[in-house]
Length: 282
Image (cartoon, rainbow, N blue to C red; front, side):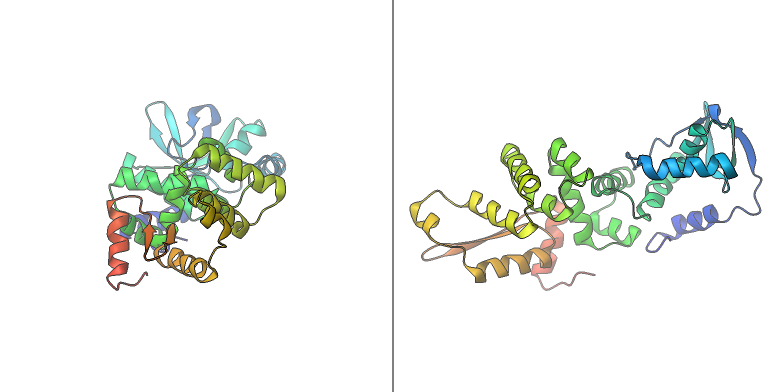
C-alpha cells in the first residue's frame, strides 16, 4: 500500500496496518474529533449508508486509529468507520491510540488517503499541495514520496488554478479530468466556465473541447479564421503536452513560429528545462 513512501513513513504505514499486539480501547464517540488533515471532503451517501447498515448489524469490525489531543482524541485513520458509528447511534467505538506528533499525523493522514482510489482529482490535488507546503518539498521529492510520476503531480496541481465553480463541476463528475486539464490553461475564468457548460450541455469530448479552446486562443484575423488548424501542428502539440506534462501551444506564422510551454513554479520550470536538456521522466 505504501509504495514509493519514505522509509520513516513506510514504517509507520506498516505499524498502522498491524494492530494485533496493541491494546484496543472502547472510546466514547463524543470524545473523538475528525482528522484536521483529512484530504477527503466528500463522503458519498450511498457507500456510507451501506457501511452504517453493516455497523448496525455487526458493529465496528476493525478499530480506528487515533491520537490523544487536548480535547479527547483525533482520528488518524478510519473516519468513514467513525461517521458510520455515529450514524448508527453507537456510543463507543473500538480504537487504538498512537503517539504521533503533528507532522507524522499530517503526513500519514494525507498519504494514507492518497493510496486509496476514491479521492476526487481536486482532493488529490489539495493533498499534494498540503504535503508540499507542510513538508517543504519539491514536486520531484513529492513524486518519489507518493510513488507517482512528476507529470501526474503537476497535472493535478494545475487543477487548483480552476475557479471554485469548475472545481465543483470536476468533483461532481460533470466534467472529466481531461476536460479540466484543458480548461486549466484558460486565463479567462468566465470563458472557461462557458466552455465547461457547453461540455455538459452538448456532451463534448476532450478533443472537441481542445478544438474550441484553440479557436478561442487564435487571433481574430480573417486569415486565421479561414485557415484550418494544421493537423501536423496539433499532433506535435499533443506529443509535447505528454512529453512535458503541461500545456503546450505551437503558434505558426508566415515566416516564423513559436512554442509556448506553461510552468507552475520554479521547480516545475527546472523540471521542464531538464527534459529539454535531454533528461528522461521516471
